[in-house]
Length: 394
Image (tube, rainbow, N blue to C red):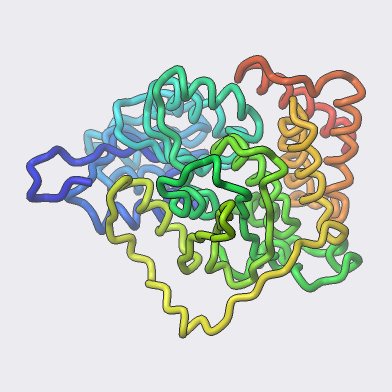
């Protein structure tokens, strides 16, 4: 990364999902490094007022809100600033493809797939926090990246840790890659208590501050299953070499095991500013603002195998990855519908995995879970699975 004395231009950054938890953390890192970065564009979901505030604070040149209903507030907030405002899904795609050195892809859920793919197809360096891009359309997305010469940098803490732990390793010597899971708020709960968990209980994550969808996924370990699918595409390792271990302290984020018996790991306190700073400055290092790890203060690190009986969502994701084709796409779509139904009070926590399993079975039986030919095909599979899930809930 350049510094203020190098004479090189600052690095231009675009933030997709600027008003979410990743976006807010990115803004904090950028605030510490104003001489190193400029902000080309920011995009958000529906809160035009909040997005306008972010755009002003970061000195963005363009701001796009996905929901047109948020446009009047965005326009009013940016009046007189010279920052261009726009609204609608196409405006978010426009933000994604504007010239930038790094695009932070942090729009949650499948809503983030199109703009992330657009940034990839434009040949950008994409710091990927939207895991649905690779879960929903992994193979087409990786083909698009190769064709456009785009670089994907893993921004999820676990994948970023593995990326750093890999170093310049000879890939033929890699035996396994392991993602860690905190275990979430229900790690020690019985299956019966988990099934009856309330929304407030599911949102009470012990280690991480995240948006509601990701937090609920984490409570049931579905989030870790989706991350396995993401790792499969990011790192190109066979599914049977990917592992999950529960690590309640969330200090070790990912591990790589080699043929000689050695293991390298990525460690940091649970703070998304660490992987964000790594992606923003790669291949160099910058200050993130996160507290530094003091192992003596942590005292002890513990690990345990995941319980696939109490956490069936993780088992479903593992099976979907093994099945391949369009099954992970269906898994992701059905899960988004199920989680939203839980948030809306239409489904119990214990029913989330059951709905996902039912939609996968029905989609496979109907021949709808085929290998997506391209991103559009993946999104069509996603759409059909959502319709099935919605009908199941009706």
